Length: 117
Image (cartoon, rainbow, N blue to C red; front, side, top):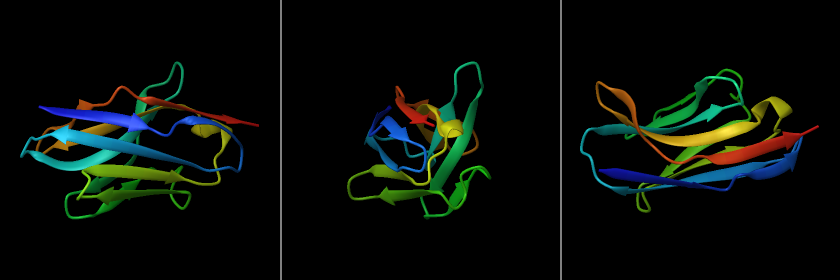
């Protein structure tokens, strides 16, 4: 079993920056990546960024060049540095752990990010 705890959300003006963190505890040897999804009110939950155990990263087109996902293996933590934030980045950000052959499986409780005009 794996627990994921997010932190770092908040309110920021457009153009500002925020840094989200996700601390993972427990173990599941089938996990091959960690990542972030976000969900705006009334919208589906979409992938924002992910990082594999080997350090390969993937980003949604809408955040590429503005967001950076990193992983600290020693602390079993991933971070999402979000720069040049836009109002459309507003939503609840969820940390997720991907299982090999399954996809996103474990989820955190989410952290709210609000970007004002």
